[in-house]
Image (tube, rainbow, N blue to C red; front, side):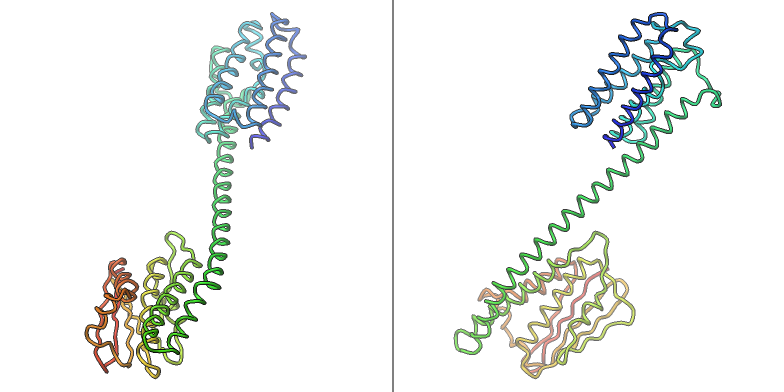
Length: 363
């Protein structure tokens, strides 16, 4: 918009030059008229360079332009007679004076543009000694206000569009980098942990504990990578039921309401991660023939997910021992997540009776 404004400035200078040629002989001080017109051209060139280069796009420069325009308009008092000022538009033409209105509007928006336009109109009114309300013969005030409003609104829209474009560009770059990191993690750490877990279980003995730790970390990394690949917008929602249905399999039975169960996308993602951890634990520890049942209930003011298996259950004291050994999958991935969401996680288990998690978050 600054470049377009300087094209208008050039055209307005051409018009002002034609006006100067036409009226110079009628001025009381023709020589002074050409001197001031030379100052007008010099100032116009300085403004064009300043705005195109960028160093003039600040409030002090725009205020200086408004002051120069008003001064040149008021100089008509010394260049021409009172009758000439009454019969003609103020020197050096209203069209050229509109440049100040345009600059203020581009820099600070429609309100600033209209205020600058009113200042130019006020200078012309002071010169003539009255304010004309005959819009049919003198539409200067309408033109100045309209230009200030239109250009200011266009500038605000352009700035918002530019900001959105920059945000979209940053988001695209962030997503690309996230995908690159995800590929590296998947091709490196996750595959190594999966290999360690599989080989540890095959070897057995003391290495089985290492295999279990590696398996837990592998699942945690997969969840982290999956969550990182799905950015969330502020205020967006997600259907927890649809997310849970994705975990249904031959061993996992998922029951959800017919209607979508909508939660804030960030809450739904963390909730789903806690359920996923419970499912991973059931797959790893409930036994090869155990089945898992997932039930989602929308209670209005809260949402509950039950994860129950018919496996071997968890021996008494096993969770405390796991924490003491540094394995905090249950403590952090399930209980910790639910506490962070302001909900609760309740565990019911015992040897030979299976395991049931009841996870609840408030709305």
